[in-house]
Length: 217
Image (cartoon, rainbow, N blue to C red; front, side, top):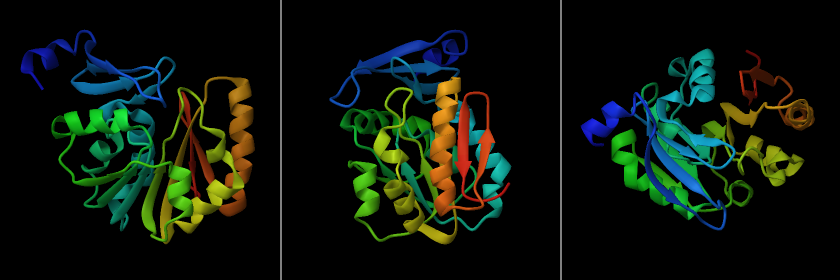
């Protein structure tokens, strides 16, 4: 990361590059406040240490006090979740990302974002969960198509697969946007499914996100 660009990014966003794929018509990367910010037309996919929905949730859950060795991230972005977690945990990271353009961007700028090793698998996360038998101590669900979670990730089959992929004392954090009354009605509907498999589940309600967690807070 060039020092001058990083310095200037604290005053205004600096455009880095734009790409696209069959999954995302436009992916724009900016340098903003010293962090890489990946955006689509309607949403921020990743924003380094300023990806505050996960920052605040991780802090509330006191992850550094938990025995978390294996982390599964569904939706890679620019690796914001890894960047945040590596300050708290010594863990092995596996990221599932369907979009090759996002994987290419993350790999290109990884050394400037975080130092933790990770494995990235290019695959549909639903298919991955339903066809693997590993378990993880922390699963972060962060899959969007712009502002919407694709419907297959709102189903009984997907939430059941999440539970099957979780270690006995593991944590699931499922991110959803909170932008409208209609959106929150859908959030409530999906949370009812979530509670079917995680009866002690809680919603952490932030400014623009609802974070489903599989335990009481």
